[in-house]
Every structure is written in C-alpha cells, then in structure tokens.
Image 1 (cartoon, helix red, strand yellow):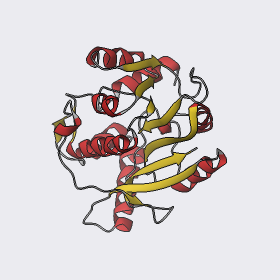
Image 2: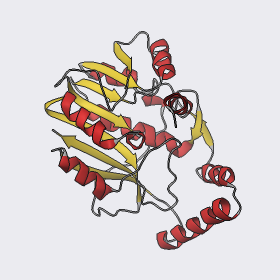
Image 3: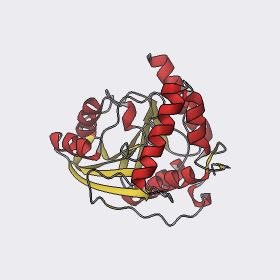
Length: 260
C-alpha cells in the first residue's frame, strides 16, 4: 500500500464523535482513554496516531501539555477545526521517524494503532523522545482470540510474548494487563473451530471476503453514535487485570504500560 492510500485508510477508519459504531466498541474507546487519563496528570504528552477529537478536551485539561501526530493530514486538519479552543500542538508526522528532540515527553500513548507500524522503528523513536523515567502506554487487539480480524491496512500483529520480548530488547520494564473477556455460550475451543470453519467457507471456498467481514460486523450488535465527551459514553463495569497467561486467548484487548 502506497503512502497516499495508507493515509486515506487512516482517515476513513478513524472514529469521530457522531459516527455510528457497534455499542460494545464504545466501551473499548472509553476504557482505554480512562486508563490514559489515570497516567496523564501534569505530564507532557505525545499521542501517536492522534486520530480524532475524542478525549482531547479531557486529556488537555489534566496534562501539562498535549502534542499529537498523525499520518493523515485530514485527521490533523479536522482535529484543529473541532478543537480550536484547546491548547493542542498537532502535526502531520510519521511515528517511525519523528521530528521531536530527544527527551521531550513524559508520556507517549499509542492507542489501537501499533499494528500499522514497523515496531522496531517505532520503539526506537519512542525511547528516544521519552524522558528518563517516562512511560509508553499502548493497547492492541489480542490476535489469539478466536474470530480475530486484522484491521485494514495493518502491517503485523504480535502475540503477547512477542511484544514482551520486543519491549525487553529496547530496555522497557513492562506491565501487561488484559480486558474485555470474550463472551460466548459456546466453549472457546468449539467456538474457535466454528469461526475458523465459517471463515474458511466464506473466504477460501466461496470467495466472499466482504460478506464475511459484514457478518463479523453484524455479530458485534446494534450501532450507536459516538458521543462528543467521555462523560457521555455509556457506563461500563469493565476492569483490566494483570495477565496470567502469555498465551491468553480469552481477552480481546491487551494493555502495555512500559517504563523507560
């Protein structure tokens, strides 16, 4: 995928207030930003893949400063327009080659986007721009959960153990948490086999990859509009917990809090 096409994909798949998304996905968004806010007090923050205007007001209120970069010029222009009253520093930029000075930030966040990057370049750059004692926080989908579907335009997903080894290589001390257990009346083993069979049937046998994607989307439930403020998101009872199994196949979301 060329650079222009990739930028287009990033804008197309960015979630904005007012968009319609599956109800459960609202909880994914609000949960990850709640975790970010718990880390943000009086910090100089860099958000990589700043995406949309979601949570910009809340983060900038508690942080010392907010800087965001995004590969999509359209995303940056729209955030500037929708958040013009906030004190944000926004740039079109590449997470693999950032134009910031060494030791510039206390906290770097990268939410639901690391699978679009060359991870070695990304981690090298994050370590460079983080101050001593700084924190990298990111989340990713768990590729080992039955029914996992990669995001359009993504490069590579890593298992929890692969991430742990990569972060160790760059000298990060890492806390790993999991959240959003897969809910099903069918036992996970049987469910995994059923999903694999259906995926094989739709894509490999019938050649209906678009129908498979639509079926997976419909299985997420009814659509709901994304609110413009975090306090208007539906309440949830989800709590993250320390990972117990590096081969976790139950939880949909993995959180990494990494200390330089």
